[in-house]
Length: 135
Image (cartoon, rainbow, N blue to C red):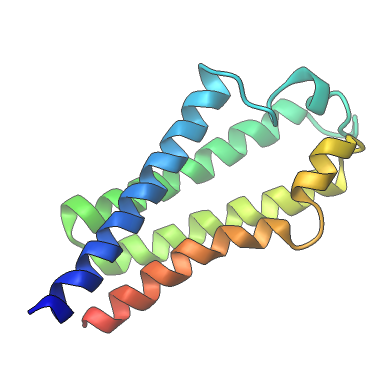
């Protein structure tokens, strides 16, 4: 019995964690203090695009992730939830790579340069593996 319950507990704990993480990121961007949305970082970006636009686009990706996780948790339509989660995470990571390529801020570059944005794939991978094991 524990063999069935423990993976479910881990799965739903990770989903709730990911949901809360992206919820708090959205909160910090619009109501709190977010490093990426700060004037210091935004002023280091290339002037060829509207830097505020990328923050809004990333917010849309985070909302997609939240909606997808809600589909997994509440609606119980895990297939749509998993696909949406991967779409949102993938687009968010791609936007982080793109943002890094446009920045000259050393602190920002040290936080997000190289393969560091790929760590965003860790929890979705574990969630997907646990989900597939349950079937």
